[in-house]
Image (cartoon, rainbow, N blue to C red; front, side, top):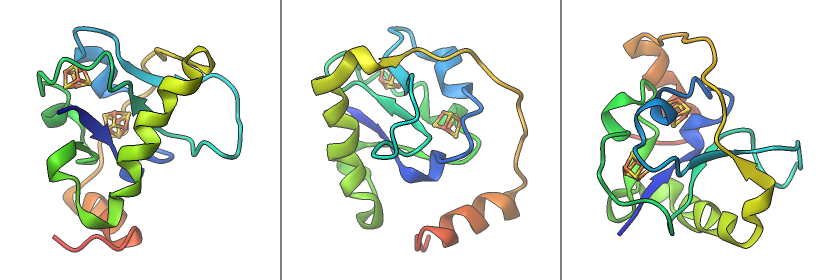
Length: 116
Ligand code: SF4
Ligand code: SF4
């Protein structure tokens, strides 16, 4: 079992999750390779499945792998794939916090086709 950051994080990147991860396994790509959407990823080999990142995410983008909504299933493999090119990722610095409203969060989910 591991935890997964879904596409709901794309273009958000406030790093609230990074702040609390005890093992620094939440990372960001260091270049702008278009194959890798601008979001954070969890290294499944380093994640200790503590779950403390999940409630910190204002965009509700983080899920336990077994709980990932169907629409984001591909994100499980995408997070896992960073292991193959781990040197291209590093722990980012925290950015400006732009707390979303509940309506913002729901609009972001709807954009990705997620129905809750
Ligand atoms: S807290 Fe959520 S939205 Fe913010 S960077 Fe982490 S996963 Fe992305
Ligand atoms: S579950 Fe724990 S170890 Fe895994 S990414 Fe979240 S905070 Fe880090």
